[in-house]
Length: 280
Image (cartoon, rainbow, N blue to C red; front, top):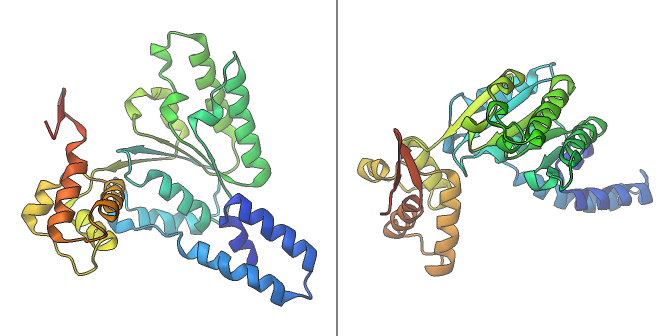
């Protein structure tokens, strides 16, 4: 792995320190540089993506490999689906694998308090991505790609129009994520070459995630997996954090099932036209 690859995936504060240090010491002091490269490799070693723990509408591993090999770098991707299902994590992982800086913008970063400010912030975000050659990720896409047929304020139409304009000619990959696909303007979907749904885990995803988070030899019964139908990887992370605090990191089978069910029971699930509270 060369120094450019290392630099790409670093958090901004570490990246600046690295650049300052390499400019100071120059090529003749490789040993000094290597002292800084080593911990950076440790940072990169943590940047992984567990494809087995994700239930998506396409084979994400195959897609990632094809995107890496492709010479085409102008396309948009929409990641939609359940909260905690791996959308944002995949976006960051893709940036690293494509050898691009990662630029993420949340709704709070872009929404302005005066007329026209949100549109200006959106334009600046795309311009920043162009200048840096970065993979741009915008969370909460439904906030900006508002269904114009239901708009009650002109600024909602203006925001959607500005984003569509920026998306049309952007020269690099960009990703938008949302938990609320149904709120997005239908005309926006053609701007995305790839539209990928992230859903609740299948039984095989649950078992893979349980091994990753708790015990590599853990094997759940078919009944246990059937009872855990509404989980995402984010739920496993929260359940483990709770066990670290409340159970002193004792990951017994009973505790694992107990805490995962507790996370599941907090969810409001839509079944048909009805919304149900699982834990009620």
